[in-house]
Image (cartoon, rainbow, N blue to C red):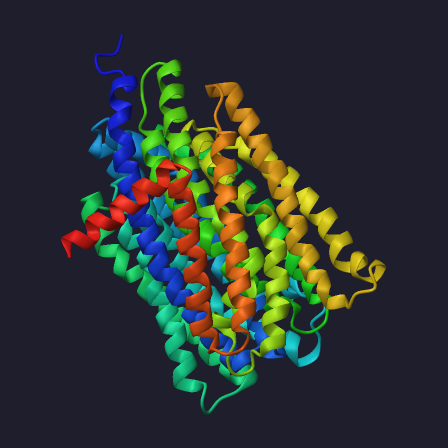
Length: 537
């Protein structure tokens, strides 16, 4: 019998995981705020134009590589193995594993970037078959500029894996601020005298510079933690082979998810001008709560869950405890996020993007697309945590299976809802973009429920208490209704930014007050953390 069973050690881990989640959330918040500023600047200069469509579509191909070999894949395949070695005190083997993964990742990325630059003309038709003439040629040119920067971002994901495993969460998630600032700088530097496709190319080079900055700011700390990185393939190491065995299913899982995103982009390219840009703007806002409250909790919990040792029963008990805590944290913030985006999305979109070429009509269009996204918001964030639990158990195949099901549903529903449903309902074709996001949300619920059922069979019952969900919605919906009333009463009296502050402020205060009144523990703990920080200052 183990002398220090996880049943005893596990309670000491949640505070660390909670602290880690706060650091991840803080880093993500900074990078997302910078991202919103970037999108506002982009909307000011490009709006829903052909050049804007080309830029957003061009980003899809290099983003595919980044997502395929970057943060999500390394988090699932590398961090559980590396964190386990650190927990066992085997620093020499951990260092060799880190060196091997860095070497293999650099080789694979170099080959894919080089091949991607030459294969771009053939890839464009797979993501934007509706683009023709100059718009198509410019999209090709932009993709070729993006590719080198993508390679640097993939390598920065290795740094993130090292930092997260050592519980150094903030730097890796705040580093994208530099990426965003480089793009913002290019927009302001060249936006006054350059327009359309010429400006898009200048901004693309700013993106490459930002990728180098994002990688460079993390590298020194990662190298210091590894303590002696040396290039080696390390294929004889069992730890390396374990990472590679886990890597392929996760790549396939990420791949099928990316296929879904590509198909959304493909279908949007068949809709009227502006659909691709509107989808991108909506996804920026939709991903904000997922990143802040889903990714932060999942990223912080993964090393803790992967470090659990002992009997299968002890590991299962530790996972259930960490899952429940993480799910409650997620739901407390995601439920009001869904209500706010659904009822107050136009206020949010206007405050962030309504300037220059992005007018009030663009705001209403993006709000509708955003409203469709709220269908699967809670499922997507909870699903991330359940997938992390499987990765901690070194099971990468189960998430792959259910991700494939979700993608198949997304493709089928998206095709019907985007291209056929608007005509059946007598609507303009552009509203098919709303069908894309809503159908993806419905498929997300199927994936989440499948993941939860499969994990419950392995570790016992887990999930959010129905009573907690009821109290959260009983707080979020009245708060959103009040915010909607304030929005209507204000009309156009205030600047969009000021109106957003007033409306969202009222919404947030009412939600916080109602959750406190209904006895939601997370409301009280959040208030206590804020009070402590205020007193320290």
